Image (cartoon, rainbow, N blue to C red; front, side):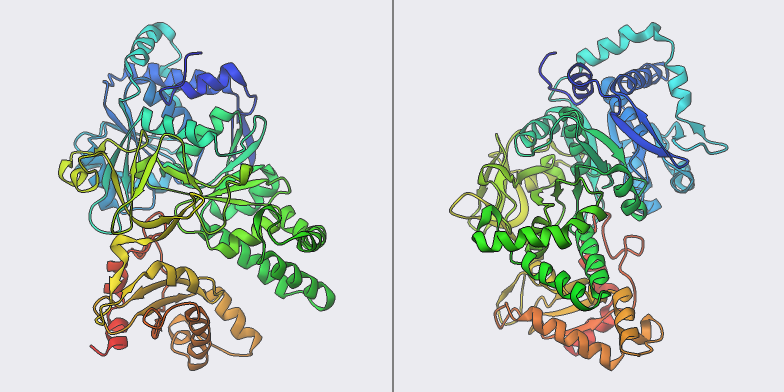
Length: 590
């Protein structure tokens, strides 16, 4: 096997090296169905033959929009890439307007959808996309072509030589995908990533993660995001069976059925898992409850590599036996490692999950960097809680004079599709990509992210405030689901807070309070008083000018659908401020 230089080389490498019986497994109508490496490669090649029969040319764009991760996605991906085309994955939850924009901007000629819901959204804008020839679906939907029609069309192997010729023409520096970032402002930008961009990231990340042949993974983060997609290629390269979860709502069932050794996570999921565990612990009584919270307190003080000394380790051993083993069981019982990305991981979560024997390795990167720039590695003392690890091989990072993290390497995108001006704004003449994040290296070479450059603001007193630091601390409260710190040009920082309504109503029930609906709850004086305590506690670790002096509770759940959040769950600050302008003006007396 020649060295891996293009993404579609990876399945062939897996076939030659591991030849898995269960390369990919998806649940259909209640049953897990496995696809072997051989079947995966054969079907992807059938797709390539079918695409050529449909007249697909090199550099044509083919869109994929799937509500869940599934085997079909990976087969299509490889089939598309082998013929020199580009895969354009689209977030399923964005608006129809954005669907139309991305399909038009990318000039996609085919679109593959997962289900009826996505199909209806695409159909509603189909007339606005002149390049779109046909829609295929993975689910069987009446009146829509099924993707298996392509497998059928590709059964005839008479044009295999043409497929081989096309594969041979694909060079590592050729474009593999356009990923439209869900910008917190304005239109999505099409990030151009080459085969080499992503392959280099797969190979460098492999050196940092203890992924072993024969392990089982559970994949549920959206594969349209480069983080999960790169990890899927990495699983394939390492000979790991990939089970595709049915969706976030079924994650706890799937964990128990699949019993994975490894999975990728985002901090929000870990927060929810932690909160639900704590909630169960709160329902215990007597000695059991005492033991539970003793273990949690112990876990929150965890230091890697026995940093707390032998007596702590002794107590930890007991806590693992009595309490934490049940946490592991709830997550399937075999989970050895989780890799976290996409947002800052609260150190308390990193500590408590590591204490429970399920360490979380936090990494850092952006869509534009394919994505990994740095990642923690438990081995060889390469792990430090509160950091995003050390920079990966062949990637260079320097900190600009204003604290911004600049990155250069084979993982940095070619640019934004059809937007040379936007590209020039972020890639300087020396080839450094300007991440927009503020960070620093410690003495041991671990990278820490301190804030988003664009999100830092100055109060009217001229003091700089880093909102993310405050927000991450405030979100440690079980009462707080989402929070946005405001105050640019104002006399002090303040916050708009979306309560964790589930927990809030539970708390009210325990205190025999009737809060009515969400609208009444957020103005209830006892509720506001309780939130004051939470804010005060969070403020304790910040300087006087950084403290949140006032806050208002919002009566809605902040969501992607309602425009508060991007598909990757980042705050759309401008939108949130506009939505709650009355509350904002009330805080500052405008």
